[in-house]
Length: 349
Image 1 (cartoon, rainbow, N blue to C red):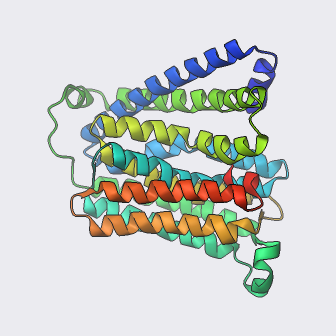
Image 2 (image 1 turned 90 degrees about the vertical axis):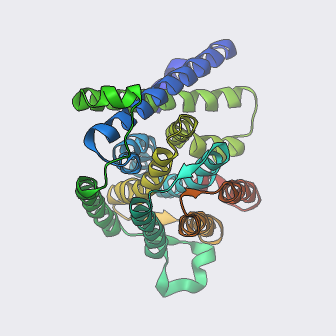
C-alpha cells in the first residue's frame, strides 16, 4: 500500500503534497468523528462499557497500520524494524497519546473493567521483554542484543484469540453503561447492526487516511531536506499510531475519555500479541532484538505502562492530569535519547 502511494506521489510538486496532507487530515478527522460516535452508540445498544468497546473493536481497527508495517518488515528481512514498530507504538500510545488525552480532559475509570484490562496490558509488556532476553548470554546483551523466537509469535497469536474471546465473555457480564439520553444513545437502540457497519466505515477511513498521510509526510520532509534519521525516529512510529491519537483526542473532546483509555490499553495489548506475534510468526528465525532495546526502549516501555498501572491504582474515579505530564515527559525523553544512542531508526519505527 505504502509503495503504491509513493509511486503515485513520487513526482508530485510540494503544493500537491501539501494538498494531499490536508485532505488526508480532513478524512482522518471525519473518520475519527464517525468512529467515536458509533462506538458510543454500540456501547449503549449492546449494554457494554465504552472502555471494552475501545479495547477490542476500536483497537483492532486502529492497530492495523502497526500490524501491516511489522509483518511486511519481517517478510522483507527487517525483523528489528518489525519489533521496533510494535515497541515504539506502545511507548507512543501510552506516553504521547494517553499523556495528551489526560491533559485535554478527565479520563474516567470504571474500576472493574479498567483494572482487569490494565493488568493484561502490564503483563503483556513484561512478557514481551522477558521472551526477548537471552538468558544464556546475559553478558553480551548490550552488545549483541537478543531474539524473540518464532514459536513465541505463534503463542502470542493464540493468546490474542484467547484475549478477544475473554473480552467478549466479559462484555456479556459487564454492567451496562449509565443511562444516556443523548441523540446518539436514542439512535443506537434502533440499529446496532447499522452502528457496527458505520464503526467499521470510520475505522476504514482512519486507517486509509493514515496509510496515505504517512508516506506523503515522509516524502515532503525529504523534499524539505529533513534528515532521514529524524524522519525514522519520529514520523513512522508517530504515523502508525496516528489512528489511536486522533481517536483518543476526539473521544476526550466529546466527553468519552473512557473510550480513549480503552483504545490505548487495547492497542498496547494488541501491539504485543497481534503486531509482534504476527511478525515473529512470519519470520523463520524469529525477531532479532538490537541492543538499544535493552538499555533504552524496553526500560521506557516498562516505565510508561507502570506509570499507567500506578495511576489507575492510585486514582479513584478518574486519571489525574499529573500522570499525563509524566507519560508525555517519558515519551519525549525516549525520543530525545534515541538521537543520542545508536539504532534510532530500528527502535522507533
